[in-house]
Amino acid sequence: MAPGASHFPHYLDVDRQREFADQCRALLDGAVPAYVPTVRGGGKMHVRMLCLGRHWNGLTYRYEPTRTDFDNLAPPPLPESFRRLAADIAAAAGMSLDADICIVNYYDADGRMGLHQDKDEGAESIAAGVPVVSVSLGDTARFLFGGLRRRDPVEAIPLESGDAFVFGGPARLRYHGVSRIMPGTSPSNLRLSGRFNLTFRQF
Ligand code: SIN
Ligand code: MN
Image (tube, rainbow, N blue to C red; front, side, top):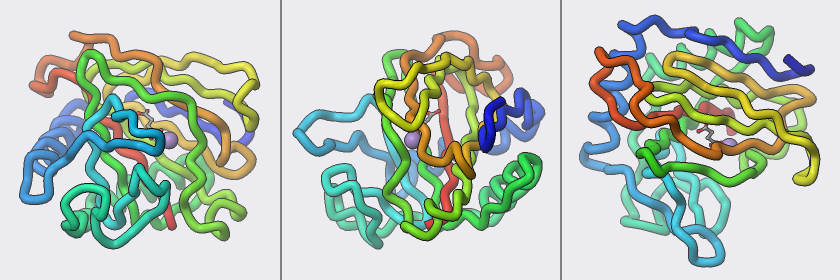
């Protein structure tokens, strides 16, 4: 695609999509449930979010060991199968990632996410260009991928169920977001209406 950015359409076959979607569903409705974060400025996000491994606080834009912006619970650990998936995808892009964080977002038909940079991980990780690895499950998203400045032109990339997307190296701080979800496009055997997106990061 562009230096540091790679798109792997249908990286996961339908059986593996189903396996990860089932795990996401169980986690998001589990003992430490997903919630709709309130962000700086007081607005609500348009996703349900669950962080694994470390919690990203939407009010402070910092990672922390417990969810001080919500219920003070510790986030669930990152499952080994998730960590391995992220490492394999990064390797396919010619990069290396030892993820210790996964943010799982659930988008319903009205879900979206404004343009932003992922820049709250450790300074060393970002400076080294350690990639963010994204995995999409369920309904197709219109993913926006911009440049290093907010005003740079933005490319719209449909991310379908099973797709992986990697941005690291010189692309690590590129702006990105989700402008909309295409309802009803999820593979029927996933039994998922809406979309899960997993982003793996190394603090
Ligand atoms: C994110 O930037 O955290 C999520 C991107 C996506 O949902 O594809
Ligand atoms: Mn992001």
